[in-house]
Structures are given as C-alpha cells and as structure tokens.
Amino acid sequence: MRSWLPAVVLGLAAAPLAAQSSPAIVAAKASGQVGERYDGFLGYATAPSGALRAQVESINIRRRALYTNLAAQRGASRVEVGITAGCELLATVGVGQAYLLGDNVWRRRGAGEAAPVPDSCRR
Image (cartoon, rainbow, N blue to C red):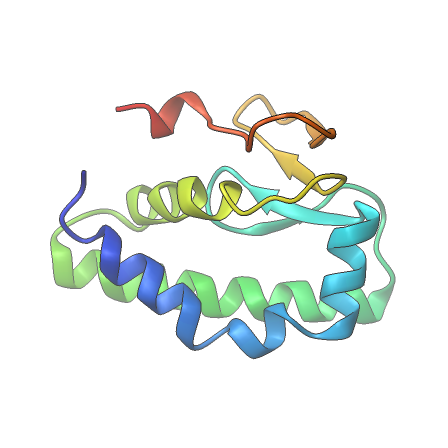
C-alpha cells in the first residue's frame, strides 16, 4: 500500500466534504447523473445543468489542489495520487450510482454487485 494513502483519504474527508454532500451532488449521484471516476475526480455520466456543472467543477478544483499538494509532499505525481484516491472513492459507490473506469465507459452499480475495483487498484 502506498505510504501516503492515509493522507489522501483524510484530505478527501476534510475540505471538500461539505460540497460533496450538498443536496444537489447527493441527488445527482443517486440519479446516476454524476459519478466517481477512476482518476479521483467526479464526472458527468449524463449532460449536467449549469449549476450542477459548477458544483462538480468546484469539487474537482479542490481535489486537484489536494492531489497536487500531497504529490509534492510525498514525491509522487498528481496523477498517481488521484488514481490512488480514485480507488478509495470507487469503493464508496452505492447501488444505482454511476462510475467510470479507465476504459471510459460509464456504468451503474447494480444490486448485489461488489463495489468497482479498477485494475490500477490491484497492485
């Protein structure tokens, strides 16, 4: 396991938590409009409204800043930190929620299916 993984998880749980749990984001995730991506960012499984797009972009800006800071502190690349965060975030995808793996195909987690685990998480 990467030694800086706990810092990624703690960082994700702290700063952007309020925005990620806004009613609009929660509803968009539940409806499958917005979902977690393998690279640690939120994405659009369907065309979003302008207001939803702005909220997702705000969350992604904060995630990018967190990944950049952690990468600098830990001697890793921002992409590497983001992909590691993506592994943790994809583990939280609920039934009916959308998610994106490295093949760029949006999927929805079905009832009885395990949380998605990209190949990049199986190291």
